[in-house]
Length: 474
Image (cartoon, rainbow, N blue to C red; front, side, top):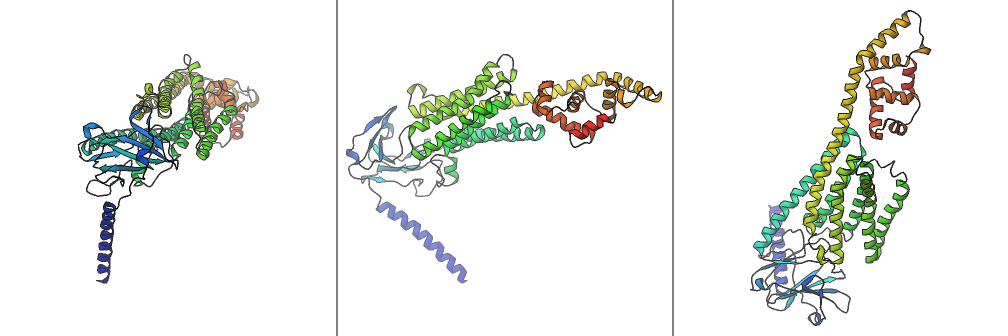
């Protein structure tokens, strides 16, 4: 009984404190600092309804105007749909001068979750003010709408975002499964690349802000994640196209490029100097761009270069246009917004995923071709085996002068080896490395490792030395 009374008292005091807090907010709102309305505001490039100025403390202020079609005293919704502009103060005139409004409080005073700071208000004046503190105004965009229009727009945006997240997660899981099957690093690199891109869009869509109820905010999260994404894109292109022969010095010059990417990002994080941000953007596109240049050179002779170049190149190109528009406010590039980047990326996910499936199918078809070739020679090999057995019975042969074809027949029959596995076994007998075997047989390093693993399993050995002993015992 005492426990229940205590619980009811706590609930009552909590409700009373919340209600009292709302009354305090309604009666004593923070007013806009005096003199802000008299600052000299200059129009923001490309934003006809937004003006900016700085006060004596170095704070950045923005004055905006409500569209005339909404200037009728009805309820409005304001937000800046950007995860990079969440720390600001919004002032509106609700009949008693410009006062600071509390974000994420709806019309009836309830706390709501939103992807970005959201303000519900009823303005008595056309203008409103934003205090961005020391945050630059580049790339800023604002939205003022009716609650019903905002709800419709937000519903459509969430549906499209969830569709993109679903496709991205499916591509990640799909490539992880392929990596588990084929042990090829290209699949795991592509999975990591997709995850990095997914986290970029997840942050830009305000989902971290939404899930953390407005707590999560990392000022430089985006630029660091883009650095990781650019590095993974370059490494994926290099390994996908097997550029080791065409770019023998890749490791030597890739390290300074990667150091340049993360070094410029670190300098920008520490100093907030835009030059380092622009320098980082150059490295972002230059590193994977060099690998794409090699793909262009291989365009005619390598089908995979053609398949990779189109979707991968379009993604980089559209992303570059979006970056230029975001940081340089070029009106000609206003078409390349986040929706276009997302659509391009979805098309890239589908395109590159089909490319990987095609490559896997090609490897399987190649193995099937070798299997059929071995079956066609099976009869001949069995004949040679019988001849070898007869020679041993008659005393005309010994272990030192076995004919090469007879040894091959014995290996093929006893251990059920394929033609490709026999070729790899001959190379092991010659004490060649996996890389030398791959170059000799014109196959990839991962395919070579796959055949070597099958040989160890079929011969019941653990290393190359034991495999050589099996041959010597025939």
